Image (tube, rainbow, N blue to C red; front, side):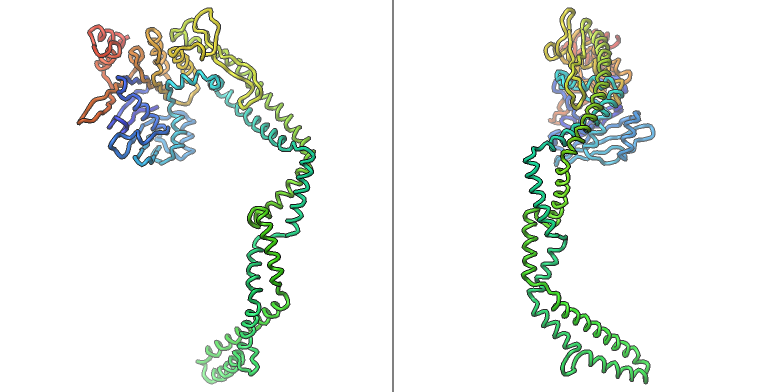
Length: 555
């Protein structure tokens, strides 16, 4: 339920603070005064798409903010799951700011959230019904959804179970179709897979091998230099023919240092350091000797390295561009070959699974269809009652169900039929209804569905299109009745509708400092009488229209 709303710099509205009643609220005003701006502001607050052109000319940003009161447990649960904190009494402030650069800043309960999340939340808080919704009623593909919503939780649960089973069936049928290859194609594919598996298996590719081979290639290309440098280093350290090598010098120094340390202990550390250096040289010498021995015994020829790198390069090009993808291709090929070789067994198995799944889906669809058929009569009866109240006493409304093949929503096709006059057969809505009849049918459906809808607030944008006279009076009474358990907002051009509201807001346009502004004003009783008189009689308000307006308001 929307308690109040603040609008800043949206189109012709400079600033507006609006407090609403929790019952029936109407908005009226001259054509072009800005009623659509108000509905657009509500849409913006609910996360619907808006253009930066919506920002008032000359301003850098626009903002709309609303204070909601939430009581439905499912909505409160949604808020909690998304880390949005409502107050203890269910109050929640939602705001959205739009900058000239196109940036959106959305907040709920002080927490920033993306527009997509605001839109999800908005659909749980308010339902905006415009004239395009009336036109949607002419599309018979929407009629099944209306019926299922009327049925409520039972249909929702059954439909969810059915859709899950139907999804499984579609997946099995797709797999069966993929398995349906002819014998020649099967043999051709087996030959290809076996060749590729042998080629990759024989290659015995390993991750990191290519980098290691490239390193070995550098070493092999510099073998002589390596042998010469390592051999000379060994000579300098240990194997000098003249005995003038690092090892001999250190050994002699170590012996002398030890003798000196025996005389003066202060040289002990020096002696130990020389001894440590000697050990290091001995270790280094052993490593150099081992390196040179291994190099001579285990060295791979440059031809062998180049041959292996060439093989890896060719397999990389053929199987995905790198060694890892080639290894994955081998694994996938082995798995595919296994599946093909057991193809006939899988075909028999999947046919059995399809049969079981189809049977289960058909049972659920039949159960759902039976529920729809019994509920369609109830829906038709309730809509007829509502249409009678809305000054269509001879209307016969029928929710017709015809069978269809198993599909995503079951085995039922639903179409709404109407006979507006006694003695005439019921026909599809698109063939017979006028704008006024369509508005009343939609209002009848909305009022019937309202009980099961978690949304507390319904917005009707010119729901009275094409309605006049006694039908308009009944339309106002129906909206008033609906406001007993839902908050209602209605943009109207009818005095019969506006007179039934608890709160009446006048939207009017005027000039101020050479700028055009739209104001939203809550009318007192006198203001309401004047506005009703304007709606009834136009610009020239007479004593007669004033009296008529007062009578309508007091009725």
